[in-house]
Image 1 (tube, rainbow, N blue to C red):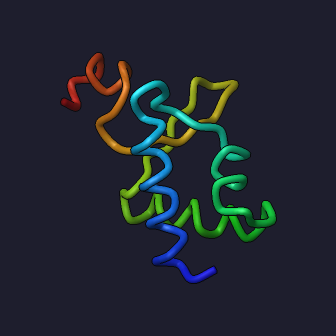
Image 2 (tube, rainbow, N blue to C red; image 1 turned 30 degrees about the horizontal axis):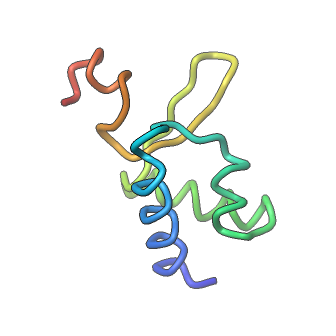
Length: 79
């Protein structure tokens, strides 16, 4: 899968699901991409690097989401 195609697929899917959920596990993203974990990790890391996605960690859980979405963004003054 080409990077731009993967990027569009992730953004579209997270935007669609964003009404009910703002953070996603890595496995959710890999499933959206229909890619092996190693390939998906490269794409997800590049999306975070380009600030298309943001990485969020509670210390025990790591998740990803679109920047500026969810309750966490509002409590951190990112809105």
